[in-house]
Image 1 (cartoon, protein in one colour):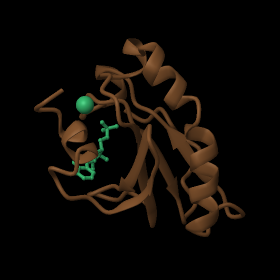
Image 2: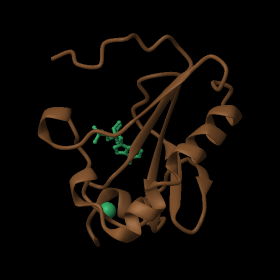
Image 3: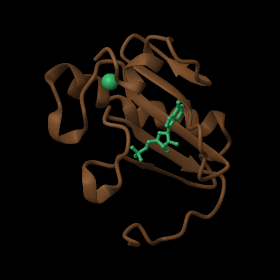
Image 4: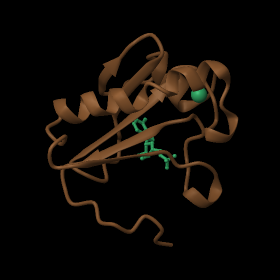
Length: 116
Ligand code: AMP
Ligand code: ZN
């Protein structure tokens, strides 16, 4: 999608701190990190979120856990622990409507995922 922020990042029209790239996926540092390690992993093909998976995005996104595990090792949080999550829709707080997974680590993240 031409005006989607993460599509523009995937096309390198907007700069980002890329940490991983292949034909289908891109990972880059979150611009407003909420943990010492805060990366975003996206399929390059546009899809708004988990409710809108296309076969192409579903195939690419299936590889995200393995890429996250590789990045967790590279960023030194594999042993200490990390969280991989995707917000989907209004109640989750999703703000960018191009599917993305947050990889968070480097501190104790706490057990509460449902604070209002
Ligand atoms: P979400 O709230 O799950 O939709 O997450 C969107 C994330 O994108 C937030 O954590 C933002 O800090 C991050 N973000 C927004 N703009 C950029 C950008 N230009 N480069 C990197 N991360 C961004
Ligand atoms: Zn997009």
